[in-house]
Each structure stands twice: as C-alpha cells, then as structure tokens.
Image 1 (tube, helix red, strand yellow):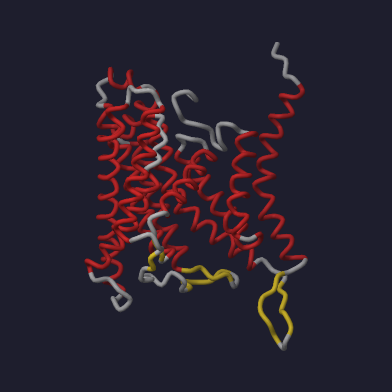
Image 2 (cartoon, rainbow, N blue to C red; image 1 turned 45 degrees about the vertical axis):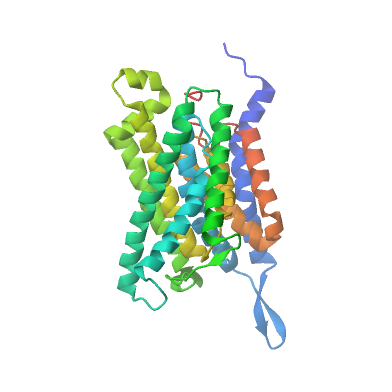
Length: 358
C-alpha cells in the first residue's frame, strides 16, 4: 500500500493548479481592470476618453504572441542541442545576431529598399531567408566541429566555458561589422501597417510575419523529428548515444545535423527580428539568447513543444509588463515567473526530454 503524505499531496495539487492560476493571473487581472476601470484612449473636447472594452488587452496579447514566436525559434535551438549532448550552447544567441546582420547585408546586395515593388520584396526576402538560414546553420555546425566535438568526453565545465568564449568571439565579430551602436534598417514590409482588424483590434504585418514564419518551421521540424530516419536517429542519440552508435547510427553526423537545424531556425529568427524591430545591434544576441534559454527551461529543456510554449508565455508576459508596469519591471517579472515554475515544476511545464529525465 502506497502512503501519500499530506504535504506531498498538497504540493502536487499546488503544482498542477497553482501554476495554471498564476500564469493566467496577469491577463485575467488586466482584462477585468480594462472592463471595470477602463483605460485612456485619447482626448475629446478637452477631456480624456475612457474605454471599457477588450481592445487594449487584445493588443497586448497579439504583441506577446508575435514576440514569443521569435523567442520560440531561438529557444528550439537551445533545447535540441541540450537534449542531444547536454550542452548549453551559449553561442546560439550570437548565431541569431549574425543571422540578422547577414539578412540586412543581403538586402543591400539584392538592392531591396523602400521603393522596391511587392513582388521584388517577396522573392528577395525568400531568397534572403534561404541564404541566411544556410549561413547560420553552417556557422553552428562549424562551432560544433571546432569547439565542442573535441571536448565531448571532457568534463562538462570545459565545453561550457568554450561556449561562452565563442559567444564573445561572435559578439566582437558583430561589433567590428556594424559598430557598437544600434543600427536602423529599412522597414521593408512596413510592419506597422494593418492587414486586417478583428473587433477594432488591428493585426499588423509584423505580427503576421512573425507567426507565419514560426508556425511552418516548427511544424516542419516536428514532422522531421517524428517521421524521418534522421529524426529518429536524433531521438535515439538523445536517449543513449552509445546504444545508438551500436545500432549503426552515425552519432557525429546526427549531432552536426542538430546544430544545423538549430542554426537554421536562429537564422530565420534573425531575419524576422530585423524586419519586425527595424533595428539591429551586436548585443541583441545576448539579450535574445538569455530570454530564449529561459523559455527553453520554462517549457522543459529538451522538449520542442515546451520551448515553443515557453517562448509564447514569455512574449505575453513581456508585452503585458511593458505596457502596464513599465519596461524597467519586465525582466524581474519574467524571471519571477521562471523561479515560480521551477519551484513548482522543476522539470518545466511540459517536462524535460533529456537522458536523465528518461
């Protein structure tokens, strides 16, 4: 007979239901606040106009989803690499930064500008997406081959420090490339333009762009991992590299493929970020990498679905905090949520998919 201790049972219930309540607390609170107290929506006849509707909270959530889509693309690279070789690839954020720089450089090479027609923009950006993804995928494979593979059997601290070192190397590449100040880029897709509206809530091109890139790429990756021979090899290598090697799987090739896929997604995220934010700089990789790694841990390290969920949750939290509390509180709120999730669910929201987790 299994005896369940009262405190353990209480902790399980809190972890199950308390997290759901906590994650829903911010949007529910501000929804009620907007409906009851209202929010200022301009001036008329010398007085402030107050609206009592869901327009403001809907805008916050849409911004959060679009931001979260970018974080999710970067987080998948972190989570897949950790899931297969248990390494935190701190250089991954800088690969994303290089992706933005490469994309902007290709725009200039292809002659894309504000005067370019719609057809030229579409085909030019598709070509830029392909080239940027290939460059970042190749860069990630190069990093794995040069820095991580020789240290695969070394103590875990050695590849970790090497990853930090590569992060600084790529940061300095970006610093030499475009300098130390943020650089504005052409708003090629006019990301602030409204595509359509839903109950007076404008859906802008930037939001559509972020989601339309993230959703197909994540779906394609999920299909690749679940249905293809190389995807099964990746899952087998993540579970037990030695057993996978005995079954005829080329472990080195599989690991390189994992880095390539992570780099491809980071390159796509870099392109979307440049179009969405219209500003790039050498330090964006550190900030984005920290947020994306937090998303991967929050969702469950090694878990692709968890990385996507964590990215979207962080995006929504950031949007609500920026708009309601002020940007100075955003990082504290995000990491406060991370600490709460780790206390209640140490393996993340959807659970880890690593060797130790089983």
